[in-house]
Length: 214
Image (cartoon, rainbow, N blue to C red; front, side):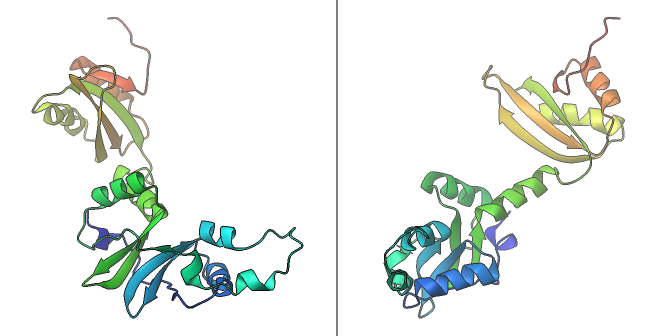
């Protein structure tokens, strides 16, 4: 999946010569927590709600409150922010969020702002990819880390005529020779699938159901 598929294109922007009061008004009116700072069509910074909180005095302060609100955006923004390209892969951008500990990123093409991506956008995309927003059940299976094993497990779902909404693959922390397959399936009663998987000698980790010795 590409960034251009999930980014927001209707972006609320600021300029570096606007004031802290302008930032407050924008965040309140548009109900946003981040905004790119754009001068002459080029992204020069980012302002977040954290920057705003640090710039505005406490409501308990006895100092005059007028001056801090007149500060320029250039004084409180994070300059030269990390940027993404619309053709970047979402997974790669998610790593940038993690490594740089950021909550948003401007999307730039040909030196022009074309979109904006936040951690909320990434989270919702993950929810969609896992199928967690759709009714269904989750089944976790431990398998050997070898070629063809996903196909073998998938045949069980096919035989049970159950639609698979998503598949995730995790490393097995207990055994490096294994993987954990996490299936999201379109059924509210996965018992028949679980029994069939166990008959085929697959190790079902979740849901954990009692096993009856025959």
